[in-house]
Image (cartoon, rainbow, N blue to C red; front, side, top):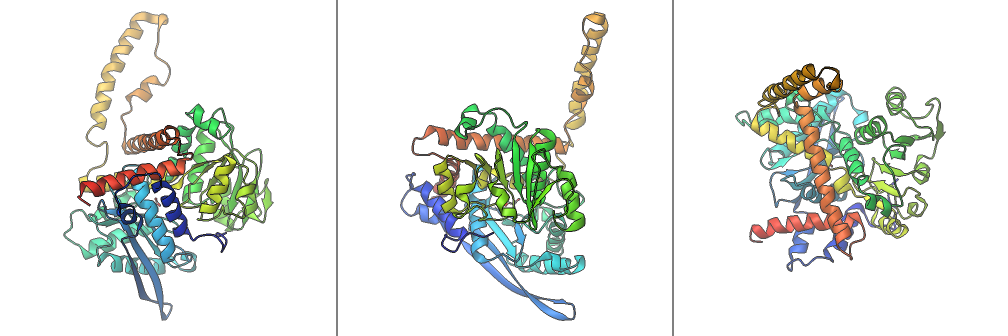
Length: 477
Ligand code: GLU
């Protein structure tokens, strides 16, 4: 559901949130405007010969800020794509990258299309043609603009884009770094597909490490046993719900999808629901759970944590007052309108904002880009050496244990666990966890450290804008 007509558009919402934050800052005159505005938006209309005729498609690539290059951000395939949305998403990418310290400016792209209407071969032709239009204007380029997956796109599209770029730039040794989110066998990195959902999990873990922050939401305890409602079981929502239920003991009590919602206070089996959607095209008919036709109503269900992981503007002035969850984590971009944000803040709801909560994707994209530029898999040089050093310690412990007899022995599994050197997936997870923890701490320092900042979103904007301003200043602007 999109925000009501009486509410500002998505881009205006992002600008209003930005303005609320800069009002608390002391930026040099004009710098605020320079950071806020979108640098450029390229619109392309191209034709593709399909089904005996020519179909025309409209696509966008918006560059919000080039204070660092390349600029970074996904490409979305959806019928809802428009210039306003792409610009809002590009702005969020600027702030997101600054907050999690990935060395990129912000960008975003979109193609107005319903991918479900086309078969694989047609999608490949359309995607390659769009990539060609962007690449020939340097809007896909390892040094200038590096797209990634977003709603409606995934590793399949990224592989086509990478291949298209390579065909157009046959001697570019860094061609693989022109796009991230590629399949592993096409230059991708382990853990990129799950990265955004994994980042949501790490963000929640960090929140639950702080009794003070839990208290702000009127909560206590651990993630274990907390009830969670998730909206959207796409890549992000699915991974977040899966990891939280399988690894942290959270109970998924509601899943909202396009055709309605499923509710079960005892907990829904995320894998089973995902498989059901794959086979039946929606959640309706899933056995053993209550089906609610008006899915959006389930956003208002009492639960501990609400995870909107679908579209923007789903929590608006019309339903914000009814939201009961004390903690909302924005896995989607812009799921809460500016008006709804005000209502929720007044109610005391704690919101972990999108620019932080879903930054796991771009963080692992950064690792992938670095891997592509360095032309070597993470861990390849160190892994066996690390294992050999661990083996030395284990051998010594074994000698000690043999010597002491029954008095001391190694814990079962210790040897096996300790001996295993970190491969690429372990390193990616470690880098992502470190990033999510550090970014959370930088937000919370501002949240708790300043009396004029009462929410995490404003804190996130303050940290991000300050960093972007710092990089403009060092450039002499
Ligand atoms: N589309 C994702 C986002 O909104 C990922 C962007 C990227 O990896 O560059 O953050």
